[in-house]
Image: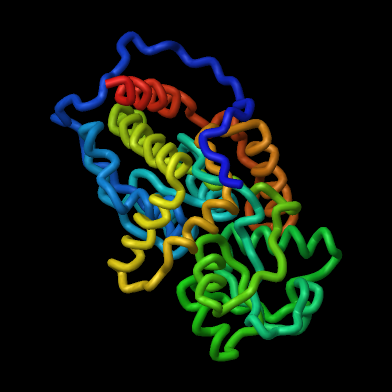
Length: 332
């Protein structure tokens, strides 16, 4: 069941109270455009469907990346101020830019959103049946790290499978043509292919890791333009609340955006995807534990040098102010 803005116990960090509560709909004089590197994840389709930031007087210029690897590259290069990323690409980026990045919120979590798919008529029942077979996934992505964690638990190796590095958008045609035997990727691609009858899901990975995705910003940008970041986060709070109260309507908005980019996706596909995800913008102790577990694995596999200190990476103040701002807007 979809869970949004839940009241899970968040990590407590002492922050000085602001002298003034910023109210929405103030003139945006002096506020910069916030460049946001999104992914093709369900809520980002919804965010692109409306100008959620307009009531808060800030402009968001979004770009869409096929995975967190590219969104983090945009952030590291300075092309973006804010980026959405899964745990694997985020941890890699922290290693490349120590002290330059900060986590301002979570976006979604749930290992069940990573699904292993095969053709509807295939006899495969689980990953164990696919040894020696061609499995497509975006190498380096959160789904790829979840895959590697699962292999480690089972005592298997990457070499037991034929890994094909592939973008999510290419997986449907590759499955249908027989170019690959299976595909492992995050939502909404599994729901899109399932509702179209192109694929069936044989396994998900909720038991491996909750794999929280994060909103990460350039630290210098947050320090200089904290007000703009707060307003963008407030707009996202509104979006998540909408998904919670009207998932069918959110599915329609997401499908409309997909259609505008040339893809035919039913609203039902996005609604199915929402049900496989947990949305909570707070960074919880459970999230940190999941991130540290992924980090420990990446260190052992020599993918990163060390696990970062998340207590130093997380800046909770913008999100706290954003909830205050969103609540004030709701009252008005």
